[in-house]
Length: 416
Image (tube, rainbow, N blue to C red; front, side, top):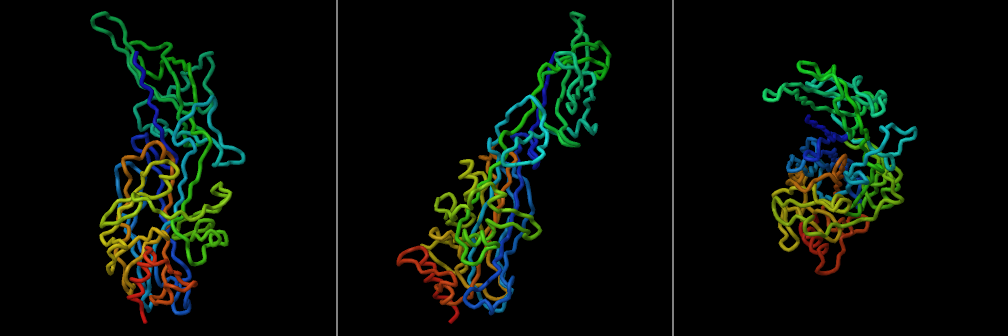
C-alpha cells in the first residue's frame, strides 16, 4: 500500500510551497507637501512629483519586475531634488518555521496579529470545488477510537485495487489529502496519518472504502508577526503626522492613504514602543556606484539576515568622486540620492529605480511577508540659499565631506 500525503503550505498572501514563496509588495510614493521651505509661496503643492511605472507582483525567488521611478517638475521654476527611502517589513516571528498543535485554528475574539498563531494555509479549494480527481471520503474516515472526525476536518482520496498477476493477491494504491476548514473557504494544513481499514476490493470505488486517521495535528506559525522599520534619511520637511515629524520621517509614525494604498505605520499598529531613529545606509551592498547596479535594502537584512529584495538602479548613477551633470548620486552621510543638476520646469529626471529583483536567497524566512518601500522625495528652489539655509536642506558639511562635495557641486549650478 502506498501513501502519498500532499501538504501544500499556502500563505494568506498567496504563498505556495517553499519553492514559490510569495508576499505582498507595496510601493508608496511619498511626495512632500511643502516643496520649498525657503520661499514656499513661489511653488504650488504637488508641482514636483514622483512618477512611476509599476505593477504589483508577488515575491518569488529568482524573478524581477519593472519598477521605474523618476521625478517630474510641473512647476514654473527650476528645483533641486533628492530621494530617500522608508521601509516597513512584516514577517512571521518564527520566520516560517511550522509548529503542529492538537486543535484546529480559530479566530480570537480579540485578534492580535502580533501575538496570535497564524494558520498554515492549504489549497483545499481545488478539492472542495471538485477541480481535482480526488473524492470526498470524510464521512468514511474514523479516528483511532472509531469516532467521527472533528468538525471542519476534511479528507479527500483517490485509489484503486488491482490483482497481482503472479500471486493473484490484491494490491491497494491510494493517495489522500487532509486539511481543516477553519472558516468558509479558508483551509489549514494538517499533519495526518490515514490508512485504509476496509472496503477496498477489486473494482471498488474509493469513496466506498473505510479509513482510519491515527494522527491529526494542525499546522500553525507560532507567535504571529513582527514589524521592522527603517528610515534611510531624516526628512527636512514636516511629516504626515506629529509622530512622523518627531522622528524626522515622511510617513513612518502616521496612518492614512497614499495613492490608493491604505497604510498604518503608527507605533501601536507596528507593535513598537517607538519608531526607530534614522539609519543611513552605508554598507557597500546597499549603495549603487555604477549604472544598473543591483543593491539590497535594509529591512530584510536587519530582520532576516538575508538580502532577498534588491533594487536595480538606472543608467545615470554617479558618485561624489566623479560628480557630473544629470546623475543620481548617493550621499552616505545623510541617506539621500541627489540629482546633480537643477530640474527645470516641464522636465523629468532619468530613472533612479529601474527594476525590483527577488534574489534566489529568498527562503522560508519570507513566508507570509509583506514589504513596503516608501519612496520619499524632497525638492527645493534651485538657489544657493535653499541649499544651505536651515529652513532648506541645510547642506553645510565639513570640508572634504560627501555632503560638502554635493553642496558645492549643486551650488555651482544654482540660479542666481
